[in-house]
Length: 200
Image (cartoon, rainbow, N blue to C red; front, side, top):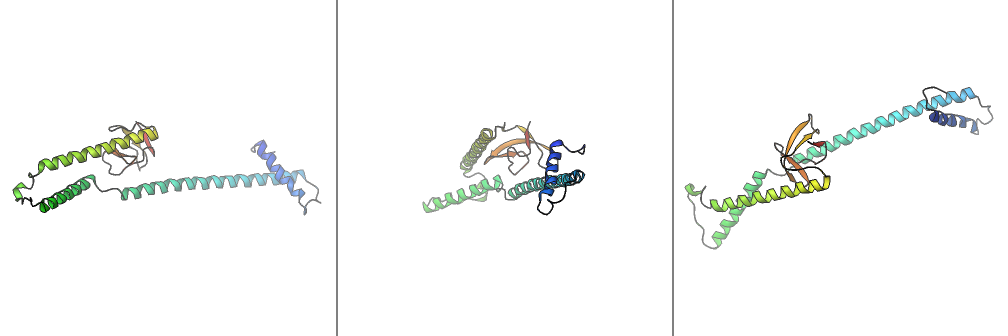
């Protein structure tokens, strides 16, 4: 037996090699022990080479899976939701549009001069902005609570994490949550709560 072959592997190799003399075409040939061992060694070497190739293929598949996952994250970033400020401005515009329509229908529309554009109805706008901020805050807190309960992680506003999914590791600070994903200061796109993230 070769010293670098495990006994169990050697027994398996010998068993396969000895079967060569059980075939109909070779059963009439007397078995040669030295030849059996030589065939067993070759079989074992082929088996090792095959296992190595399979391991390399598995590693390649895993790497491709990671690349695919990162590509999907990038696509999601490109398809990220509009800027919150744009959404708020659009909402304000549409609320103003609706209010103007109602005033016109009720014949109580008040024409505005340029000097009043930034002050007239400012109390109403301030109330709307506060409502928007409160709604966003509540949604963010609910999302963080969901993350904490689902993934058992300390996801709180102000908490810091180490993110290793980019080119270089980064220390990021949580600013909120959105639809079960983390939002970080200075980062517009949401992040998965556990992928390549370590809570500090």
